[in-house]
Length: 172
Image (tube, rainbow, N blue to C red):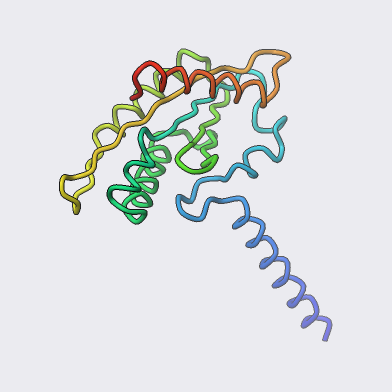
């Protein structure tokens, strides 16, 4: 009976850990979700961290014109592009809707900009067949670096401001 209790306890721990992991991931894209990214800000964003914030341009129009299934496929493909082009110690998350963020430890703002530009080009090359005409997408990006004395909120705010400036001045 002692072994049965131990086995039951281990099984319950495994289930609980699985639920916690599921609660930290975006169900559609498999990336981290906003909660996972912001739960322990001191651990995820030490000084020397840069952030790339991204937003798919005219995504509501895509959903309205081609349907939510197409929108979901685009979000998943966008997440795949992000995941395939970051380092193992980078953190990528879906912040909500069509907005995503990558935290890049030990990365300066100039390097983060190069990463953002690479992602922008890769996203622009995506084509989604199955609709007439095929769907093409673009994304806007904002980049910021964490400075001594900053916190994750100010870093994300500056990246968000840069993202909206990109949208205001022409998108993509």
